[in-house]
Image (tube, rainbow, N blue to C red):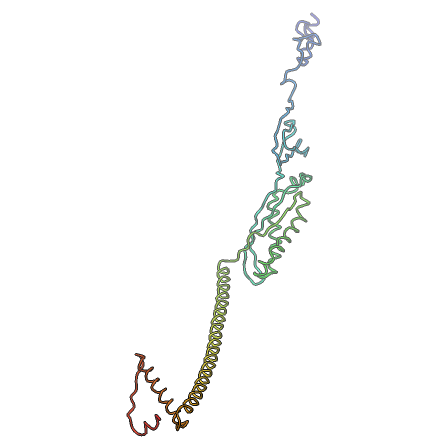
Length: 314
């Protein structure tokens, strides 16, 4: 009664031994329902092993609690979730980037140049390639712009077309010196197109066409000159040969007349050389009339017969 008056609890009203402890320990202390092990909810969160797959020619980046942990190669990889997570992948294949840049040449002609950059990630520098650059394609584009706009303005339009290899080499050297530290290898740079304004192209075509027409006219004139010269040479040669033929003909006629006069004088006595020549002239005169009358296109002229005409004809 004194205990009750002092507020002490009766033994039967006290909690059982070990009732305030974790259920898993009650059986060990002799109070409550004995249990072998805590349940999953009572034990707290647990880590799970997850399997991730990475394609060939790719590398995965794994972080643990937000910090870089390791690289995941091609194939099957295990990570402990949620402590670890794959935050990204990088391709090891060769990639191509086409950059269009418009600039002005030394002779004030605007030209649009297309540069094709072939690059890939250096396998030993995957960490730098993933963490140091936010946008590598934009970075490469910026450097290409800088080199092109510093190189092409030093050439004229014709020189720029001839210096395509030099321009491509300048771009490659500038990109290699910069992008290698970021984990990217520049394999090659190509100037795939260089196109001026449409009006400039049309003007260049007209200049080229005019030049070709001029060359064609010159060659045609040279051909006509050769034809005229060769024709003159042929005519001169023809006249020379004709003169030689006429001279030989006259010589043959004279030789024949001389022989005829000698034979006629020896055969007919009392004739003089003048009589023989007159006879031969009359004979040739009649032969001429015969030939003139034999041609239908020849016009015959009749001369009145008088003493003066007869004398002149003789």
